[in-house]
Image 1 (cartoon, rainbow, N blue to C red):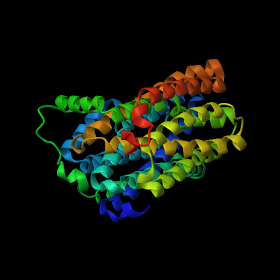
Image 2: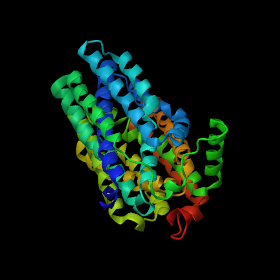
Image 3: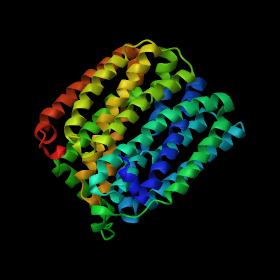
Image 4: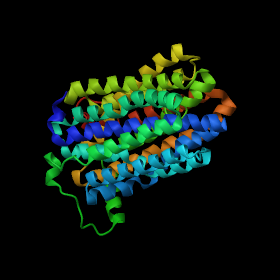
Length: 409
C-alpha cells in the first residue's frame, strides 16, 4: 500500500495535494455558509457553488499547456494563484469590505483555475509513478482529496465559528503557502512516461487538441469514462457538494457544526474506499468496479432525498462516500492507463470538461427544489441517472464488464 512513497516526487506531491485540498474545502464551507446566511437564497448558493467549476471550459487548454511546459511548472503556477486569491479574501475580511459580491467575484476567478487542479495532479502522478504502482498511487492520491473534505469541512466550520472569517482565512492562506512550497519539490518524469518527452513542436494548439479528441473518440475505455463522468457530475455530485449547506440548514435544521459532520461523513467514506483500493492494487477490475458502483450511487442519491435528520443522513452520507470512492478512483485509473503518455495532459483536460455537468446540475436543481421539493428532485435525478448508467453499460458492456475486458486488464 505504501510502495508509491518510495518515489521521491510522490513524497512531496502527496502532502502538497493534501494541503491544497484542505484549503479548498475550508474555503468552500466558509464562503458557502457566508453566502447562504447573507443572501438566504438557495438559488444564489447554487450559483456560488457552480462558479467554482467555470474553468472547466478551459481545461483542455490547461492540459495542453502542461504537456508543453511540464505539469510540475503548471501546478506550481496554479497554486500560487490560489494563494493570491485567498490572501485577497483575507485582506477584504480584515478591512470589513467582504460581501456577497466580493465573494462571488473571487469564487469566479478561483474557478477559472481550480477546475483543472485534480486533472493536473493526476497527470503528474501518472508521469512520475511506475506503471505497476499506479492503482495504489491513485488510491493514495484520492485520499488527499477525500480526507481533506472531512478535515477541511470540520476545520472550516469550526474556525469560522471560533475565529470569524478573517481568522479562518489566515489558516487557509498558510495552507496554500505550504502546498506551493511542497509542490516545488516534486520531481521529473519517470517510468513509461520518460520515453515520451513533452511535445513542443506541434503545429498549433488547435491541432494538439484535435489529436487528443480523436484519441478519446477512438478508444472505447476513454469514451466510456468521459460519458460516465459527465453523467455523475450532473446527476449525483450536486447533492453531496454544492447543495449540502441547503440540506443542513433547510432540510435537517442543523448548524455549521452539523454541516461539517455531514461533509466529514461523506469524505470519510471516500477515504475508506481509497485505502481499500490502495491495498487491493492491480487486483481491482477497474471497469466493472466503476460501472457497478455508479449504479449504486444513483440509488443512494434517491435515498438521500428521503432522510429527515442527521441520525439517518450521516450514515447514508458515509455509505455514499464509500460508493463514490469505489467509482471515481477506477475511473481515473482507466483514463491514465489507456491514454498515450504524450497526450495525457490534453486528455485529462478533456476529462475535466465533464465537470461542467456539475454547475449544470446545480443550476437545474435550484428551481426544481422550489417546485418539487428536495425529495422529489433527488428522485428525478436518481431515476434519470440510473437509466443513463444502465444505457452506458449496455453500450460498452464488452469493454467494461467482462473480467478480460480492455478496461479490466
